[in-house]
Image 1 (tube, rainbow, N blue to C red):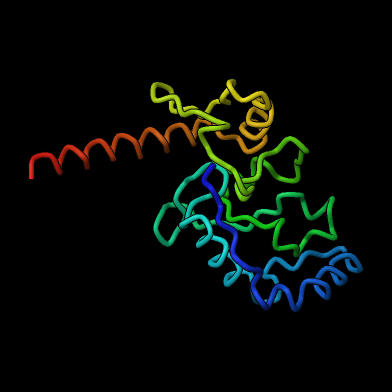
Image 2: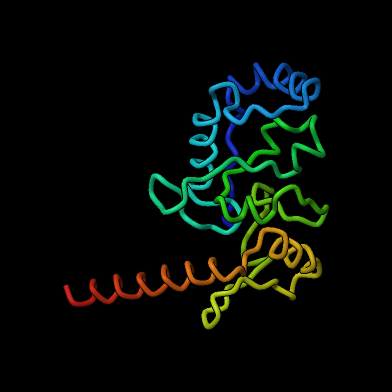
Length: 178
């Protein structure tokens, strides 16, 4: 997970969230285009993590491989009042979003927490490319639950990390000989 530096709530969200929430609750239908603002909101959210998934840390486009989506930390289907709440929204890759789906657990970690630091909660196994809970933290079960619900160690994610790591090593060795 990458630390998310949450900015001030976008004006268009602040001005419309009550109306949009009422409409969603009344109709039960989700406006996937966010009333024409989803693209703009996603760009704002991506900037808070330097274009990384707030959960698995994969690089999101335009810089990376994954386009990115808007994550409702507390699922909009279960927590309708939080559907358009700025503090409930995160930039996420499609794989993390589809794995989590509408699952939620109170133990889940938030990368926008004031004192969030990856090393306090997780460690990266360079042999297996897995993300594992840091059991030196007395609340390590929170990290374990986050890994499970977002699918941090799915085979595709392990392969992506291995690819990125191997290419990083090749790029670094190229600089040594220049």
